[in-house]
Length: 198
Image (cartoon, rainbow, N blue to C red; front, side):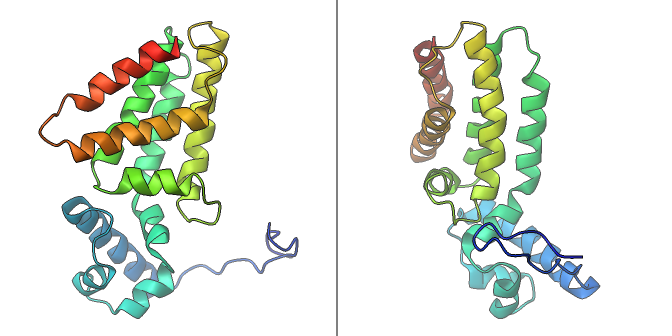
């Protein structure tokens, strides 16, 4: 049976083989070490150092993750799942605009856990070839549902787009990252966002 169709060529790709046990262990070790390194040093942490801390060579890292964005995508899958779960929880909220802003606030909080993540997500939203697009697209879809509901309720202007909101959210996270002495900045900017949406 043929594998999935490649979007680039329209041809069938061979199905992916499951990872061997040792390869799976290496993959999980790299993701765990990268998660710690990104939290400690930001998303521009040394890939060589990540491989070394995992007890592996840089070639092994690149076999699993051909570039930094691929590694970041793997590291952020748990957070992505949490943000998607949160969007489903908020989908039936009584105040759709507040639900949308709460969800955007959860994105700001997540991005704030890793210095450089907001900037990377902003660039990935404009680059369909980036591995981080695999994070951006599900977030975009989840946010679009919350935005549509808020617009249908009349509490958010019809000319607001989810792409603009996600860029604004990442900009807020980036501003907060650059202003560590002002821990209330992100909340203030989100409140301004809420006023601007109405």
